Length: 380
Image (cartoon, rainbow, N blue to C red):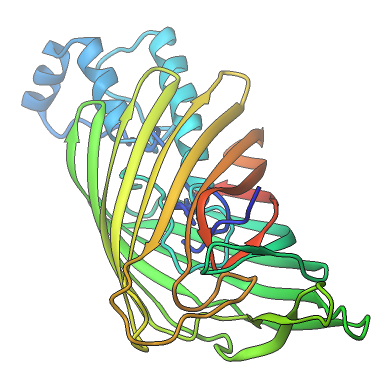
């Protein structure tokens, strides 16, 4: 298994993720955050609206609720809805919100959170905080080979959030609060410890289509390189003579601008979503294409589970030299990764969860190894 920059939150990462998401999710998300359940039941504005609503079938109501997740529990339609419909919407709402929280997963690459196309209503949203641990082994270089090197670990504290700022429009952000890297030097037996801030990202998401159960959104975002983008330690292999196989980087060292689209569909207890975007990178880095496909289930007990596959592909159109860093930060990284995430609503509108991530194909210029994340998420 290899480490892949994914969410996301996700999207996963998802914005900035490692493994399958990312992020958040965001999929993030977060996680992404990554969520068919963000609908808001609108109050009837006048007598005509009330009459029209009463003429609408309960089935049509259900479709609208799924297409516009994050429904306010305290607000109900003027049309009577059965208790079965209420439970149905609540379960799907919980599953969708869980997707948005973790769509962002947890890798270190500069990717946006694939939180899905569902946008919270003005003043509503969610926030996610997670702790990510990565156990690295077998560096995957750009030449397609795998090299053994000294023990390598990462421990990141990260956050993701999204809030509705207008009808169908949300503001989202993602950043690692603190990154710590632990790289062993096999030639001396010592371990280098490096700490750095994250490279924060901020963007807007606009839900332009709400067709019943099916929704679509467009988004744009930017990431600022606050962390040091220079190499901080050589990476030495364990082969005889300890040849240098790369250099550890704790930040990307480049500005990113991304734009993409997402689509999602919600059933009673399941959802499916997809995301794709194009990323412009400064410093003459390769531009990149990224994508996410995911699906999940949410039950009445407060338990939710979802799976995600994410790809990030450098296009080879830059002139800057490629970087070889186990962190995956820098120029020329590629991957196809996965994430499996689950969470529980232990308190009203408050979730605790765990995700497991890794790479499955086309992984280059980063380390192999699993990623495990624990997260807390709150809807407001």
